[in-house]
Length: 170
Image 1 (cartoon, rainbow, N blue to C red):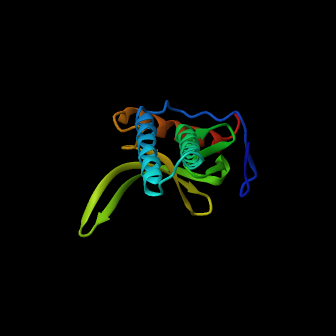
Image 2 (image 1 turned 60 degrees about the horizontal axis):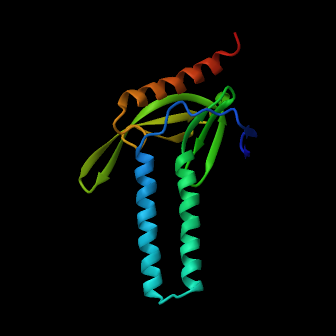
Image 3 (image 1 turned 30 degrees about the horizontal axis):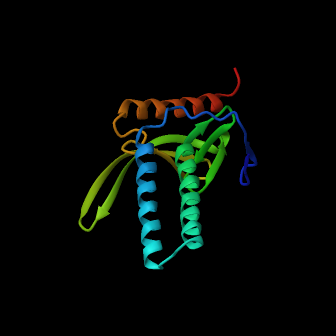
């Protein structure tokens, strides 16, 4: 269970990710396995490891891969009646609906010298204190790259849940 200290919101089992993860997650996990295998092989060769050293390096990097794969599988935005939970690769953050002023799309661009590169839409949460919170929802990301209608449906689901919470119990 995670407790969000800034809002004292307990993260329990009632959180639901309003979308099925995309197959891109498995590609990322496979790529990471390949990269860590190469790192293990290079480390063993570079430091002339044998026996116990090989097992330690291989075990350590395998453990890093398992933890990383677990976090990648759980990555995303979850909703409940109480609020929204954003699970990132390194940390998770929970917010109550009442602390969120709005949910909106943001057209992300990146600058590369004089050029601007369009990166597609992301979902942003605007907090009541004026701060903006980035979610893990990206139109061209691993979950929605080839599923733009799913991205729009998830965005609408989060907006509708926020509106329902703001309207209060009926």
